Image (cartoon, rainbow, N blue to C red; front, side, top):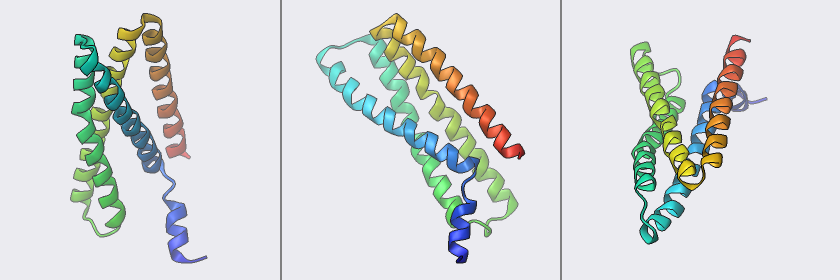
Length: 141
């Protein structure tokens, strides 16, 4: 087995799981911005406007997360501990801000239907808790 293939296999970490979650969130937010933005133009709604503003404000942080992640992968082993700590902190902040986009999604679903909003809120919170528990268990093993 070549050294490159071992490196790829060893990258299946919690960081890769976060990357997958962030990619899904970015895809969702982009689609919501597109379709709800079109709807907002034809049928303006204050709640939708606020929700789209929240989502739009978080998208740059999602992009920065991917830049940091890629930089860390490309420079693995060459960064000093201080730089690595700062980049990981910035990555964590970007993740937190990106998760705030769920607030915008929740507002959108509530504005469409109270029941859909409640269902989405409960399932989003449950899903985040389950992912966090799973990631903590994976990191402990």
